[in-house]
View (cartoon, helix red, strand yellow):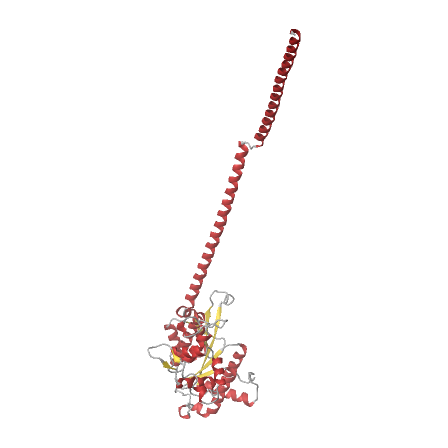
Amino acid sequence: MSSAQRVNTWEISDSENEAEEDKPSSCVKLKQNTSADESKIEHSSSGRKRRKKRPEEQQDTKRTAKEKLKEEKEKLREEKNKLKEKLKEEKLQDRQRRKDAAVKLNLLKPENLIKSLTVHIHAVLLRDRGCDVLLRTLDGLQWRNRIDNEGLPNSISWTRQALQTEDEEKHEVIEEDQILMVISSDELEDMLRSHKTVNNLLIPIGEVHEGAESLLQHLYNSMNRTEGKVVTILVISHQRRSASWDEDELDFHLNEHHMDTEELLVHLQLYWNITVHFLSSWQEVTNHVVAVTKALSKRPYKALCVDPDLGFCMDGSWSAGVRVDRDGRGLAQVWTRQIQQLNRVSAAVAKTVTSAFPSPSLLLQAYEELPSGEEPRKLLADLTVVGGVNERRVGPELAGRIHRLLTSQNPQLLLD
């Protein structure tokens, strides 16, 4: 028994030893596996650490981001600066335009523009002693004047210095369209004879006879050469002449050729747009020249300041007009104003009529639907006027006037 038991114990011990020996081996294996896993984890963690950026790289990325932000800010600053410069230039240009406009407006004022006008006097007029009155007056007013030998004889014309603007860049001197021709009664007789000779020879209007030259022929030649000129003839005589052309008030020389004079005046007025004024002295001629000079100095300023809009089309109630839009807004107010234009018609009465019939066509249609007689005339009489202390009606008198206004075919008919 003891041997058997010993064997068994050894067997058991051996198995136990083997089991015990096996256990540490398994533990070793586990340790090896864990070490391998730890090595893998260490390898993976070391790989992750390698993927992370280095401090230098991080600094570089930070620098690039800062540089980008800096560049963007600089671009924004440049754009803002450009915008500011552009606005500044626009303001300067606008200011310069306003300044130029103010300077131009100041130059165009009559008191300044008259200084640039020059009165051109033909040398032939100096033969008359009365011309000294004109020269002394121009010198006293400190106006520019010049003696010329060219152009229409016995003429007085005007020129002015051009402003340096877009319209007047090409012209240094602008010739005014007004021309005065100063003649005596004897020279007017010569013109009458020349005109009569031309009529007798049946020469067409505008053509010049080849005979002895006269003032009339010079005048025709000048009108044919230049277009747009307005010529006025001033006849100096020692006695005032009236527009009635009474023979008692005419000079002796004109008394003989009264019909011829009228014929010449009509011819000049119709075919050449030339007017003739009869003056008694050189003082009146001087006054006429001064008046024309002042009118020419005011012309550019008036043309610049004239408003092209019409008064009744302007906005605002002060202009006594009604604005009508394209959609028809405002027509009802126009219809009310039309009724209110009648005598003794208040705004309340006109509003009552237009409220009952919002348009003239509706009122006309109502008139046509009624039988002829007194009924159409009394259609509006019973309308109650809204407003005021006491209630009242439109009345038959006003109803009849409105009926005549819309139905009458006589433009000369008195409504009241």
